[in-house]
Image 1 (cartoon, rainbow, N blue to C red):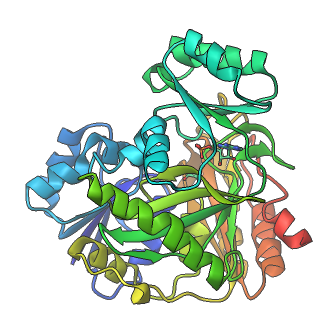
Image 2 (image 1 turned 180 degrees about the vertical axis):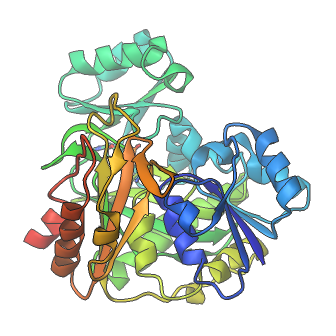
Length: 423
Ligand code: AMP
Ligand code: GLY
């Protein structure tokens, strides 16, 4: 079978690495891919901002199945377009992907279906922001409605700050069209959990839980990023909690989308805050998380392709996944300056030594390869991922591997999974 993966990040490297273990796949392609993916699959150019470009590639390649990594092609309607042409593709339609592409849609959907989430207000103007702020305590969360690669959320300490962030978003200066509407939200406290399920539009099968680390700096300081590291363990979600999350969040979402005529197929990523009042939805993503996918797939023992096909064919079941009880962790190494401006094209050394550390796999994100050497080519550069029988050992292995890698300006958090280890 010929499989095409669309995307270029650490998530896609992990998907390619896992799919490569499937006996039924004979040819594996990735577009556009990156320096590390090129070692495991044939990388082809494609512009994921253009439906025409993706259609042209698939017309030429004729894959038996396409997996879409990032949100942008999904929100452009790549699944609608491929399905219309009779091509097999894994992921939600454009209408279903609104759960991620519009935070106001997601919040109103949650409210309509009585799924727990923070109180909120949707604002299209500064007049609305000013009057809504009267109903919130500080800190207050200000979110851009549209896609912003993890950078559209600001936790404002004062109402003045909330006001000025909202003004910048609404003016279009900060995030362009993505900020032309903003959502104000009560700030929730607790541990975050990334809870992903596969859905076929009706049934759901949960993956193992993971925790991301969104802030750029140690101790959860500095601005939000796409994610600086994640871990997954057997007990991050116990059986009772998993069943609760399936019954009270994942299934109602999938049932609600179907009832509203936008069946959700693919990966539904529920970003949750585990508050004292119970789990609450912070956000949805309509795709695999990055970097959560790296530690999650490190623990997957069954064939990912089987589960993907079950989603497409409408036969998702709890038995689709078999997991290792091991712990896994991914530490993201980024370019200095990320999530602000950063330089690219720095040579990366020590990858072979890092990959030789027991239990370690270095997934590439923003890298390119030239004449056998790897260079930085993005904000998040590598996802150094380790697996071990316990979390402490997995973390030790990941950091041992990070210590062997160098590139100019490299930054990584030293406390990934630190809170879990303290408990
Ligand atoms: P989102 O893109 O909505 O997931 O937001 C990104 C990150 O911002 C989340 O992973 C949280 O760390 C933080 N965040 C979002 N909403 C809230 C909230 N209501 N209370 C506290 N933190 C939040
Ligand atoms: N790690 C969060 C995300 O994938 O959006």
